[in-house]
Length: 298
Image (spheres, rainbow, N blue to C red):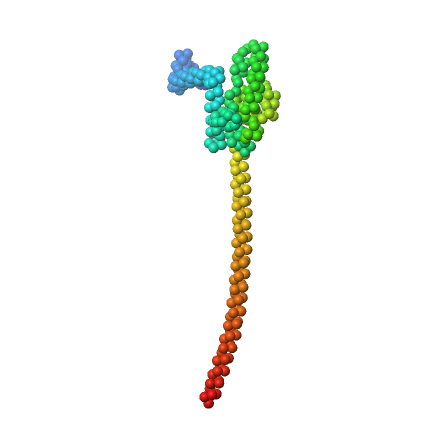
């Protein structure tokens, strides 16, 4: 399809160029063919179209390989786990999530996230066999039958997720994620089976695609950071309260010391006054003694 569009654009451009030149001069058929050939070769369009053809073939091969891989449940599960792990590694720090590790009751989800509301489990093994049969068949009756089977598959799988991974009393969050590594399948569920998604969201199982899961993880990460900031603010408040208590204690002790200093100062002043009185009396006595001695000598 890409090649056809590209060739169409090239053809239109060449026709425009020829039309403009023909308006200026009269060309013979050989001249026109030679001009087209020269334009084709000089612009390297032949080489570019060849490269595009090779790229298109590679894309078709990769698509067929991916399509064949998604047909097998084991390989499809591996692909889902890989894309899930990539999203978690891009969005979260390593300490916030675990890959295929037991959480409780010997249950091992494909991934789990540590959040403020508990451990959030994620399951990426979504049943898609009947969905593929549904989109591949052209028979309306078969399509309807496969759709019903696909709906039952979804309900059974989401029930299992709810039973295995939603246990707040054991440390889980009140919800879990069912991850579908395909936006097109998620869109089909949203548009064709919204009642199923709504019912199980009420039960705590949220069906997500790569885009919606990344968005939810961003919200979880913001919540964890907000809690961390709140805890740090609470700790700072406690530290300030402790500092205030210590300051009050120091102040009370300083007031006591200051009081002792004031008392000592008063005592020193009283002692100084007493000393001055004693000194005055002593000087009086000394003066009287000297006067007596002088009178005696006379």
